[in-house]
Structure formats: structure tokens, C-alpha cells
Length: 138
Image (cartoon, rainbow, N blue to C red; front, side, top):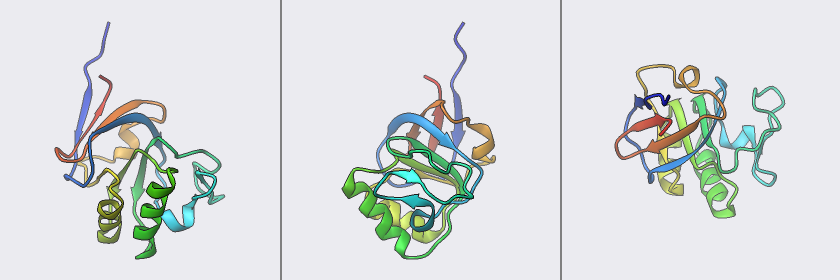
């Protein structure tokens, strides 16, 4: 028996449609302070995803934090090849949105629900930034 896909609507964002494995936590997100860009892992010890690789995953977190350096960090991640496939947030600040566009990293935010509670790590999700949708399942 197959289950129908779950579709969540957020605010349209930059980037192309991608599919991948979700990596989810209710923590906030700073590209500069939460990630080890060389190892490709979440490095802040207090983060719920500490030690886990974000590379190639659909990274789903709560709220963007940080300043202008985040835009450059996202671009560096993409250029180094150590990047999530997409970034999904409950709320992205303008600098995070600009950084995602600058880096060509798919981003959706502003869902009607807490997206960190609706999705579980390990689920396969499809992110369509132009439509502003996140679909779980096929």
C-alpha cells in the first residue's frame, strides 16, 4: 500500500528543483558558526546535528541567524562541493535569502507550519523553490 505524498507550501525562493534525504533539527542556522566547511559537518557542539554530515542532504532547520558573512559562506560551500542540496527554514532573514541566491543554493522558507516538526530526518523530500513546495515521498 502506498501513501500519498505530503506537500508543504512555503515562500518561493532561489534555486532549482532537487530531491534528497532530509536532515532535520529544530535548531537555528548559521553557515558561519554552525558548520565546518572543510569537513562538511555540523560543528557547533550544542547543535542537535553536531558531528553529522550535511553534504548532499536537504538541510531543514528553524531560523536563519548571522550576518553578511553567511552569504559568502554559502557561496564557498557551493564552490567547494561541500554543500547541502537545499536549505529549508521556517524563516530566512534577508541576508540568508541573498546568500542562497548568490550561491545558487535552493531555499524555501515561511511555511504555514513548523517545517522542522513536519519532516523527519531520513525522509526523501523534493524541493521546488520556484513553486515554493516541499514534497515528502514520491
